[in-house]
Image 1: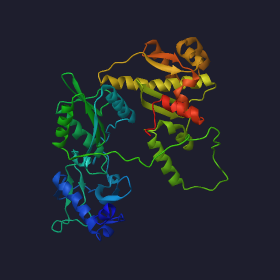
Image 2: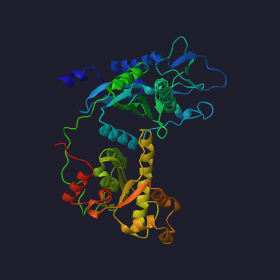
Image 3: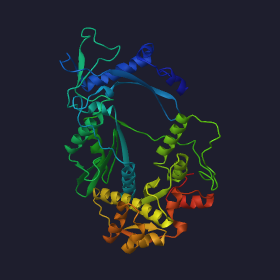
Image 4: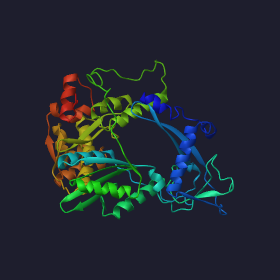
Length: 438
């Protein structure tokens, strides 16, 4: 009954163009809501086009928003700028905007579990429309919504529209200025991390485009932060997706999988396959247990690594080495250097949290690799290894890391580089901290 009632108030089909959208009251209302938001945020002003300027075209984009049951719950119409018409130096200059790394978010969550504070999430509605445009940019009036009394006029942008090259940067500048003016400090290593301290308490805010996660050792600081955000932006809380129908059995791939290109087989839809692999690659951000098989299906491999904050897994990798190795020892040496580069980033990132780590243990199951790292004489046999891989030796001498021998049976990295039987697979999954809640 709920689904039927919902379907009565929203359109189930996405129109292909404005003409088609104008035949459906649901989409007309969606377009009017978008323009009402422009008026509310003072996005633009209707003016005469100055000489020497060319207006940038706009177009409508229509999308049916669905819930986790794939039921259409909202019709969203967005007016976007055709940014490919913009001219660099005239319509925009700087476009770079920092984006949080997925490892930074995992590190944030791992730290929260150690300290013991609750993590909240907020989403800024129509975030880009808050970004201030510094350049002089003019756009055409939206199709089918032109002012009949000023048909030849154009809109001068005061705020950024979706599609503008500078829109992400404009939004980041607006958000960061708002936070800095309310007593926050920007992270020295990660510019998407904002910190506020009061007495012995700390409030951490991690920004990912228009999504924000935050938490504090003082619950009152979290409530104050919500009010700070709502005072300037229209916010909405996000809820978790339901995973009631998901289940996993056995292993992602058999030991003797025999997976290889089938040159004589029937061609598949390459677009569909790439889309499936892309979705799975996105899933590996939270499912390290399927990393190896996903990389295998995307024809990528085979150097692996993982990093922990205490017993919390915060980062993992499965990648193809760019340097040719003539022995297992050298391959592991290159992998160790790659792994430490991630450790180095984590050490620097944690300084913004007020934590300073040195002597971080780096576990290796190859004695020869440890010898190459600790003994410069043996470097004469590895001259073909690119110089930047040898920085790991300098870090070991400075005691930034401590090389530790680990037995092959307990080497967690094997989980990211090869297939195992079920018992071995489940053993490694348990060691990295994954568990089935059922």
